[in-house]
Length: 194
Length: 194
View 1 (tube, each protein chain N blue to C red):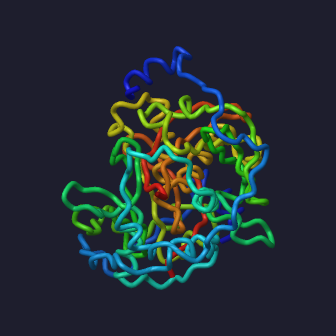
View 2 (view 1 turned 120 degrees about the vertical axis):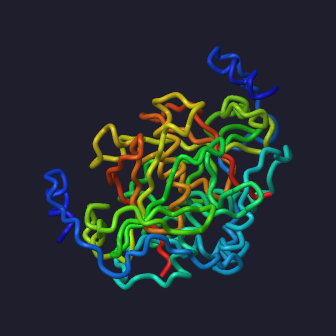
């Protein structure tokens, strides 16, 4: 299904949520992140480009764990410091992972995935033609009530900025809505771990 | 001057714009970015943390150039591809550099700084106590008129997300306003090149 068709069907609520495929386990403990490898930072920036073709096979668990840790994992366990910056250390964004086996929430403290919806919702996480079949889509959900010292109108600005800082190294869907509801609203192509 | 005082003086228009110090050259050609070095990516993520103490001495030109190239430099000269992702390849954000010598606009195509305001405006680029004396502040300015296929209300969302993707590796002030006017609206602590 191409992007224009998806753009038409989306507002009509006609994009398909499918039954889960694979093992919809309630929780999935991820392997500890490989925190010592990767390209040298400047070389990684030199190679950064958008990708619009993605493998459909599930990612190996190590790669999935590394990807999520890079997005918002804990890099300083003593006080829960994260790999991505955020204004005033608000933890207002949760990262959800849409897999063929279901929608999972990433829990940074335990580096674990928690099953939220045992269905394959990838098709409704983005309008681009690859969204429904990519190995995963990341969905960033902002709970603006956690951003207490910021005026209401600026809370979404903070959420978008924080989400942007999380996505530099990966393909993702950005998604912010107050109160834990969510809607896909834009897709930002980035370098994906392959 | 501490942050609370600055927060009070800011809305009153009482933060001080100072005369330029140093060499306010009209254009400054930056050395080509060192595109092969840096920490391995995962180790850089492991070390990421916020900084709130900054040297006041001007950055060496090589470091300044590398910092700006990492924010939004050209990594694929054949078609102007950038080091940071953006939705639909809109180039809606210009990066300005507030130095003691003046406010400069970074021109990615030529990897050059262009003088815009020959005054030291660092004091008005952020509310945090270090803003006025840090070696530089980066100011991200969105021209939403460049985001043509996006509905008006979503243009700022795009701008904040794009700016977030640019700032992961550096201390900066985020700043978006339609039509090239600008105001500082939030500061996001990140790892600074030191």
